[in-house]
Image (cartoon, rainbow, N blue to C red; front, side, top):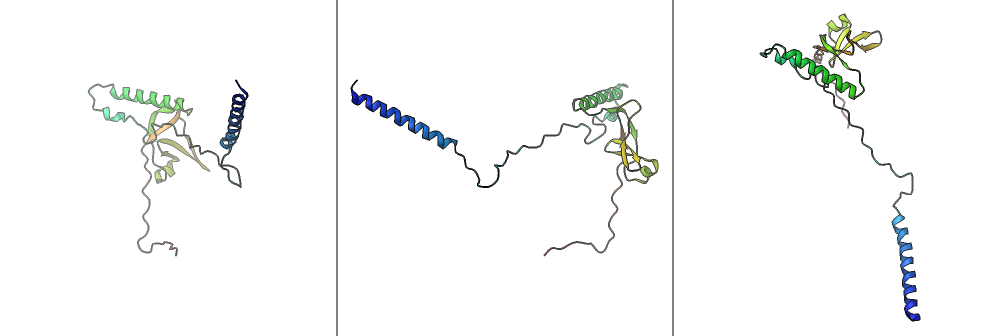
Length: 167
């Protein structure tokens, strides 16, 4: 090889190194605001675990099998329902519900105030001097209940309706 070819190759190698070195700086630069820290990435809240009893105390509705030809169908359905609810509570680290279901008046009714117990969202609650506590069943777990719809709200008196107007 002659000197000119070697000089060209050295010049080409140096040019390539300079371009690569300058190019790295371009990739390392980011747009940043002049004030404050960069905003952190949004982390959505964790999804709540499934709750079979969110809508009803007895999600399987075993009473529908009262007219079933097999006499043990209601007990079988209740056993499966209890096992399902116990397993769900265990998986989520919650206390298990009771196997028994009692009838209680709804929160806010005169009967609940007199009795000192109310059914709130399928859970039996006992009145304390400063609030309510969840009732434990004798067989273990928290006591489930049925019934107890809250009384309808009292209607407002007819006539003047108070409203605020903003201009």
